[in-house]
Image 1: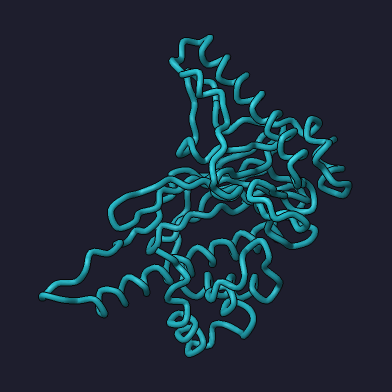
Image 2: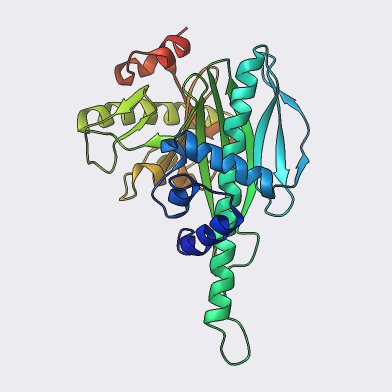
Length: 310
């Protein structure tokens, strides 16, 4: 179900409530804006929506190796779970990170409300023979795992694994996000600006895998890491087929096939065709970590590169 389908109804509600300004949340609801392209107006509207409608409970505090602490905030009504930083040596960066995370949480509430409005519309419009139609019921998305994986005064990254429910089936999705605190922007895997290929992708202003030659080189690096992980898992007794070490091609676009996020040792790449994270005999096969040094052929100069290659 397209969560933007009933966007007009939600926009109308928001305008009546005075909760949204033209060009901000309205464009997001219409499908004309995304989090990775969000400007200050949209981020402000998403934060406002969160503050108006969220009612959260707190998860337990967790800590990264560099001392940064974080915890999940889980909305009681929708189940949307997004982390917040609770301690970081640089307090200004902590506040910047949490403002962006608040906007992400607001977007999750908006997505839920769009889906819920569409369900209610379908039930009213298609009611027949004394009963409503079979449509998706809340919850529409259930978080299975959400974790901050990298946090410094410049960059914060986290990954979420969710189970999404449709009319007669469910599916697992994985999403990786990077917060560029210096620029005040949210980044995730996106299309190359100068290429139309369905395989090509980039991450922020840092990583570009654009064009057949670059993709083939990147895939070789990726496949080698997967095969190394599968070999180690087999050595510990895991029963994995020969095909487990391959990265099959299919006709899905890059954002339907993979998710990317930062870790202290390298870029994590998740193959979504595995239907979630996979560990065998204490060896993680999905995701695999691509060391930052080995990514240099695909990396553009700039602050991200300077930090990650240290």
